[in-house]
Length: 145
Length: 186
Image 1 (tube, chains in turn red, blue):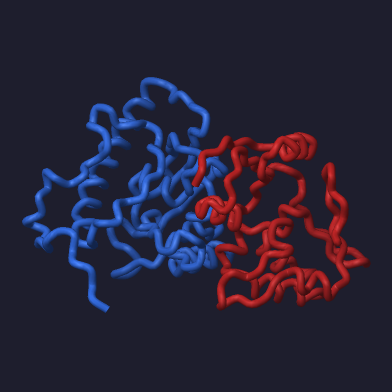
Image 2 (tube, one colour):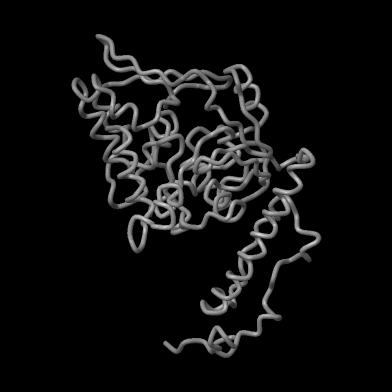
């Protein structure tokens, strides 16, 4: 793993500034740490965004809404999600082991391809089936193609 | 296919030339308080030599950690770029550990603190041999950076043991922590 400076962002503004300066965001770390160890990713600055206020889950008439830092476990275990949108709970539980689901963030794993043959699903499949929307902040973002 | 010839003769453990083993890169008086740069073990080591060398290296690490603990009592550690000091409660004991920012929680436990019951299986998150409880939740300790968890509470297999009695003849971190987390929820 290449050396890097580590910092924590305590606000969205600070996080966006650090990201614009070349910092890589880390939340659960389950993918980034692995890729950094293999030197596929070689950031010189890593910014911990876990203090940002994106941990809430709401289930309203339009459906569930989850912050980017919600962990897979928490969304899958949410009583209303499990009752009203079981496809989300099932997709998450078929994505990774319990230990990884305790760590992995929704924002970082929306498009995560399962890396192990024991797991065969991804949250993106459920999100597409439910016609979900993704809200993103940040400079230079040009939307999904 | 023929096996390549061994690089060195197979010796029983008791006949290992201990004085020629790579003790540590530095003499004991110069042991670093912060983690040295990551280096891969030499590929020429066979398993038997590696086990012998590891035993000596672990001993060296214990001395290093003791020295680190002593110095922490007298002075605040200085933090260089790429270095950090994390404060953790590990198995109920509060510890301040200087680390390289690249250090995983697993390497902190095994190499810096000397708790080796948490195993390094694949170092990629697939096996779960490195599972620990982090603030009560079981996680893969090899896929998270120690520096991210300042102030956290960790429980390892050692912390779940009943004194010197482990849960089984061989304690599997992934299974034992799963039982423990489930029991704590109930």
